[in-house]
Image (cartoon, rainbow, N blue to C red; front, side, top):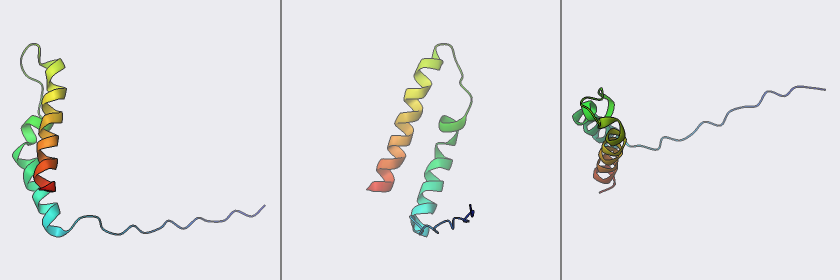
Amino acid sequence: METEEKKQRVRAQNWTTEEEIALIENVKEKSLTLFGPIKGSGMKGKIKDIREKEWSCIADRLNS
């Protein structure tokens, strides 16, 4: 039985340079909220919702 080496298809770039820069700037702006530590009592349940809301805002800005 011969083993064939599968060639991986090279994917085209999905983002323009301007879109990448906009994404990076938006994520940097909200980095503490998105990636920072959970602070305060009772935040464990809410932090997921807060982070999802921030990601939605970033997506909305990029899609507008």
